[in-house]
Image 1 (cartoon, helix red, strand yellow):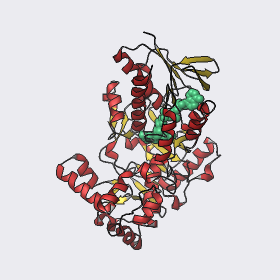
Image 2 (cartoon, rainbow, N blue to C red; image 1 turned 45 degrees about the vertical axis):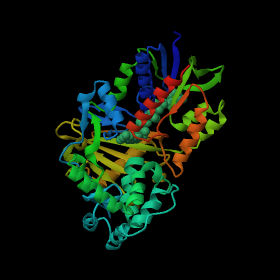
Image 3 (tube, rainbow, N blue to C red; image 1 turned 120 degrees about the horizontal axis):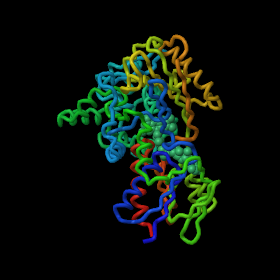
Image 4 (cartoon, rainbow, N blue to C red; image 1 turned 135 degrees about the horizontal axis):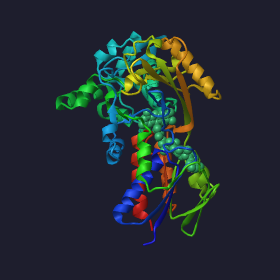
Length: 478
Ligand SMILES: Cc1cc2nc3c(=O)[nH]c(=O)nc-3n(C[C@H](O)[C@H](O)[C@H](O)COP(=O)(O)OP(=O)(O)OC[C@H]3O[C@@H](n4cnc5c(N)ncnc54)[C@H](O)[C@@H]3O)c2cc1C
């Protein structure tokens, strides 16, 4: 049988998961496969990268993922990493929010953007009395009739009022999407809130019912949801030896020699049912090509041969983020570090989006006596930082930490990583843009286009999308 020649462009988690699934399925089907994975940078994993400094472990991109979406955990188990899976440290699963210059504990009984009971709403110190009354109006206001998409900000203002948007929803959501809530599509990011409004006429009422039902059924999430305080830290998982363990294990499971690092793809042409994939060091002929890149990079490669599909991909906007990791002696940090970290509302006028006490959040990130603190910054709501060097950004991050948690002296180690144009922004109309792009791409034989523009930005979403695309690609391959 003639081998199927497959070229995957981009060795981030999407490209690696695609390549792995294609390899496994082809083996199972007894289909010979000639697999090539081309990556422009000097490492596999894309934005996922773990750094070790002395005895500390630093994540320069994502630091965990949502374990309630099964694709990530299943893939780890398949790769033999089950013993590496770790949860956030129990007992300290709470976080802080900056309010009028002071870090306040996120109140219990809130689920992301909404209180789950009138009691929780009344107890929160984050809103004025008028703000609480306005938020409580969610129980009385009729559901919106129009079924079209709307921004997260419009939804929150409509149901809960402006104060709830500025003080609670914006910072909570920025910690996940690092996007402008005025542009963020509710349908594409939090459709569950839309359903709650539609089915129960009120988000608070729906959450109260959900918590009661889950508590009655005795599920652990029932108990947890009833006490939720912002992010549900219990659902996040990471890897004991760091996030890079996953891409490293995927590379190890691929056929030897198929991954080519430092090999940017510069062109793509299609003729007579085969593809020519160009790099500086040569050309690869393929029956099947998978573009596992940010959509703007896929667009650039595809546009010359398939202008319409390329334009549809170019329509996805992307944003950036900077992650600054600091290692301190524990005594240098004046804060009690009795939580996982904090989110910072834009109305507070600070220059960072959020920070994590990484050595509290996960075990094994720092030895006794040291502390790792990770600052998340940049993105759509902090335009004044754009153009600053990573060194300058690290200085800004340190200045902010000194103010917010009290830092004495200089960090033992600092590492700043900037990820430009790496995060797809799910703006209003996103689902429609995905549909349109997929329709156009479906007409191009032997091509899969994946990445974080399509099925969700989270790591399990990228894995699920990649695995599904690999299944389809093999099923339809000639
Ligand atoms: C700072 C940050 C923090 C995040 N935190 C979390 C988190 O905590 N949890 C979570 O679930 N998700 C998180 N995300 C989102 C998630 O990590 C990403 O959506 C996901 O990892 C994207 O993977 P990908 O493979 O699609 O893209 P990428 O990781 O961007 O990989 C694309 C790859 O393609 C390569 N490439 C680009 N152009 C070419 C070319 N022409 N030729 C060859 N190769 C090319 C790039 O070098 C890169 O390696 C975070 C993202 C960022 C940026």
